[in-house]
Length: 550
Image 1 (cartoon, helix red, strand yellow):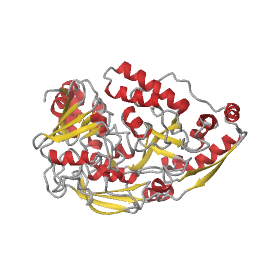
Image 2: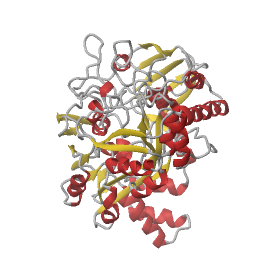
Image 3: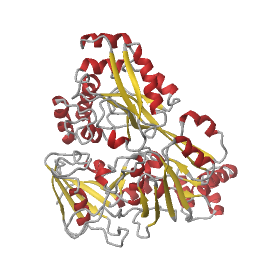
Image 4: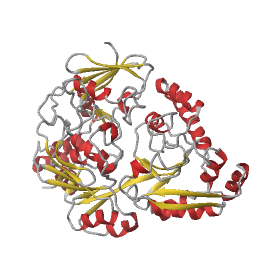
């Protein structure tokens, strides 16, 4: 099929090399161990650097950033549950997101610089109307049991998330797919009923991990087999997992011999494990003691702004949240800046009740920031026919350290608007299965989604797989459908802006902030200067990208 070439792995490499400066090529050669320190010094001084500056570059940019093979990486991960499963369509916890990226691969991946790059697909192209996408697959990739990866496996993976009987959380993301088929052993064709410009980005969603096909052409996910950098040796949900290097790994990196993932939901226990040297990295630090941790020798902290959102969904299909005046009162009764200062210690940016962060494409600048206004909140309560509200609100600290304190402080803000919120501390284990989508007013937290279409389709579209407020708006859905196939960025931005305004003023979700990813690791670990901010630990790919310093 002829189409518009969107990405080609080899062309990208050629462009990167062509655009590189002489010094950056020299640094790359040093990190790749293609030149000696002496040769580096000679060429670096020839570019005009002093000997001292060249020596400093070698130490900080080459020696410290040259990957070394070996060792076992031990990582403490939060948000683990005894209900976690190997079914990629049912991934929900942070622990499973990390296990998935360590042990399974995807067709595409978000790179550290937030661009889109290849994983199990080498290149892709679209028809002019973006309804038919063709992916050329990596011919060297193998699964952990030795099976060669082919287009049949990609077809089985995608089909696992399709159809009326599918229980996959990614079902709504792929609702426009009408056909997925193999064209030979290494070409995948996906056909849609409408243009979908974001399809290669959507395929980075953590549910869409590639798994092998069984003899009947179905996804063979039960044994945990994947094609990622490490193969699972053992996995006990809610406890941890052990992995060994996959010698058939098709990508770059995978410098460790083995990986140990430990499920530690308690933030103090995670931090203690890092300080004592029992683990090499933790997925989330306790912000209450962040300043003390920063002073500890041998510990490095990464504090990265992101599009990870705190959301407070209200089930709009249940009273009193079926009244938009009540929802508006609750949006006005929260002091966002106070929460950022006292609970997150400044490691967040203010949200405005719509789910596009300043770091995401199509951010609608200029929409008036909603402020804390208890008097206006009281007015909305009167419009709803009540003088006060009494509500329960659930949270668990496994979702975010300080989540219970968060809603406790929110309850203090809301009292000024005659709203009484009772914080409910829920068990850490089972929060996503027993509380989320079940109780009508809760604390929730989302990882980064690469494009507005992904998060809107998943969580805000009528009937979305994870529509946590059960909200429905006809105009929002109409704009979402139009934006999917709109290739004019200006028009698409206008559509997203209107959708944000609708969600802000009529939606069932309070979105008070976008949090930074704040995590820590031993200074014995090395990584590139730029790390990914789609998930904790370098976009959950530290297992592939990081190494122990030699």
